[in-house]
Length: 321
Image (cartoon, rainbow, N blue to C red):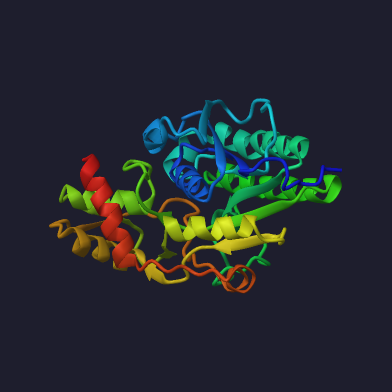
C-alpha cells in the first residue's frame, strides 16, 4: 500500500511536473509556484522548450531536470504531488513520434506512478479528449467509452492515453495511491509552438503572414477552445479534490472550423483567404465536453472569453515572429 501523504513532510508542498517545459506543464509550474509550491520539472525537451521556463531561472523554489520520463525517476527527499504532463500532444508530434508517444504514455506513466508510490504522493494524469476518438456521443461525458481506431494513424496517441488511464486506476486500486485523471479538451494560449500542427497556432500563424488558412474537409467539423489559465485552474482544483475517476476539463462553447477561421482572420485583421484540403484520417467530426461533473465537483467552469484569450495568444505569436 502507498504511504499516506503527510502534510508535515515540508512547509512548502513539493510538486513534480513531468513535461514541465511544455506548453501546459510550464503554465502549471507557474501556478504552483504562485501557490507556494516547490516545483521540480522533468522534461526531455523533445517537444518542450527551456524558453517556456527561462523566466524561472534563479528561482530557489524551482528546479529543472533534463530527463526522459520513460527512464527510472529517482529523486531524493519528499514529494507531495506528481503531475504527469509528459507526452507529445499535437498531431504533427505524435505522427512523427508514434513509438515515443506510446512509450511515454505507457512506460512514462508507469515510472511516474512508481515515483508517486515510493514517495506516498498524490498523482494526477493528464489524459485527453482523444480517448473518445471520433465520438458517436455528443457532447462527450466521462461515462462514454469512445470510438477509437486502434490501428489508425492517431491510435498511438489515443491508445497511449487509454492505457495510461488504465494503469493509473490499477495503481489506485491495487496500491492505494491517491490518483486523479483529467481529460483535456482543446486548449490554447501563449507558449504553444507555432508549427505544432494544432488548429490555433496553425490558423494564427497563417493569418499573421496573410497566407491562405487551411481548413480541412468542409470546415463543418466542430471544436471547443479553452484558454490555458482556465484549464490549469481546473486541473489544480481536481488534484486538490478527493475524486479519483476521470473528469473532463474544457470549454463547452462549440464552433465549426469555418467559424473559428473567420474569428482568427478578424482578430488578426488578416487578408488571408480560406482554402480547403482533404480531411485527415480519423479526424473527429465533433468535439465538445460535457463539463457538468467539473462544475458539480470542483465548482469550475471556464471564464476567459474567446476574444480575450485570442488577443493574448496572438500578441504572443506576434512577438515571436
